[in-house]
Length: 291
Image (cartoon, rainbow, N blue to C red; front, side):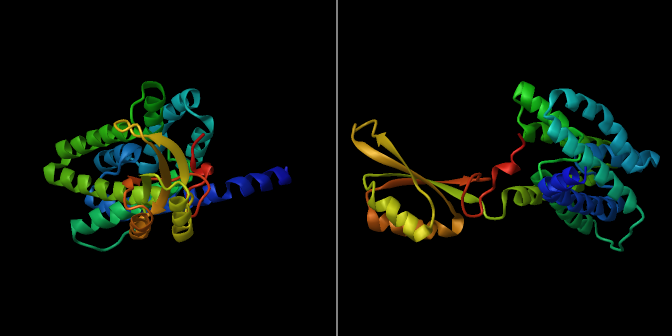
């Protein structure tokens, strides 16, 4: 039993650590900055906050109660590993919400609530998502809609948050709703940076006749792998080579210089990508993918 427990924590230790840290940061953002200004977080937490503001019901308890039917539905329809991780995430998250519920920080500007609350909640949620877990709730609904109806998860999340913003506007007025929108926007941006990284990669597609010289120069100068595919010009019918590589944005200048020197007649495009998976310098490994 001890060996099994040790193996479990060895395999899932980083995931659990990210969930714990993310939940703590997320709950701090809610308790210290959202609650004093009556701002609403996204998803289930936002609905729980609304019930707290209006009826004094504990946020942690409301998060659990709202999540119960969603977890039961998710257990049947979604990846069970994700549901288990999400249950752990929800338990840790609600624990921190209750633990930090009595904390108070002196400030007067609503801008502080928007900025600091948005940064902390975005950072916390980003760490949780990056671990492959969530805190349950609307994330489960989004996964179900995506799996069975091909509804983009970002779209379903946007619709849910739009409902929360509408409720904020209806109850507290348009000014409060605008502040909530600003906080949600900041949170989503920070969340994106945490998950995808601060340095968004660039995917490069190069059409060239220099099958050997150009890839060799790129690999030597940029220390990046290059994939070569046979290609044919649709108009001319001439044979070319399509080269594909992924680099950091800081290497763009080097890449342009190399292409110009080796093959001035080359044609290439630069594509911004969010998230690069596989073997490579600073790329994400496949363990970040929810199976």
